[in-house]
Length: 283
Image 1: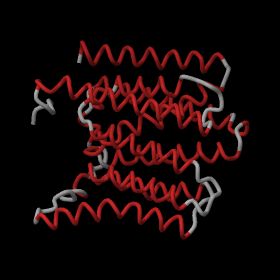
Image 2 (image 1 turned 180 degrees about the vertical axis):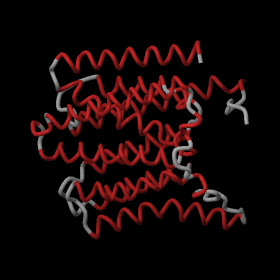
Image 3 (image 1 turned 90 degrees about the horizontal axis):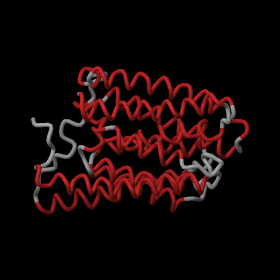
């Protein structure tokens, strides 16, 4: 199959659409941090890193749906983060799960996020029978309309065909070029250093913020595991992976005033500049 996903005549519209949706996502990145103080100071770094990752990761330019799904998830995340210690937050639970379920119609793999959402409810001390039931109902409603429509039209429902066959652990590693493998290893190493920077100063954050950061780490770990186990679906989660990576790396870059993290931030920028150059002109 050709690497070109759409005809060349529509390429400009394809990139423009991704650019517009990415702009909305950048707005959500800034809004979530401003409202919930994941990084407790005013900073451009979360937005900058998200834009840097999406721009540099050329595989993120192939499909529009992952960016739409990421926007739906970020809206739902804003709802979920506002549920802290509120065991009656049934509306937020319902609407947030409904948005994720709409993303699941684009690609059913997004439904795997919902159990992680429930773990997040426990972390935020808002889990209750009512909240969980509202989440389940929100996840079901879009699919009731979806199946009803196709059954009424007499269409064969193929959306779940070969769903589990796509889980082939570590297969993605074989498809990466040498440059991509080196880039991923270096980025993982820097991310581990960033996590160390987060947890070394985590007690300076409020208990509420600490729980939210732990929830972000949980989401990142889930996405990493999913990308390794199901490389076929890795592209679907690139924007979400970029978001959680950007937020978690931005925390020490913004709050740790040591020269080490300032230099490390500049190294991250340099690495991505080199990586983009190699992708565009060499590889």
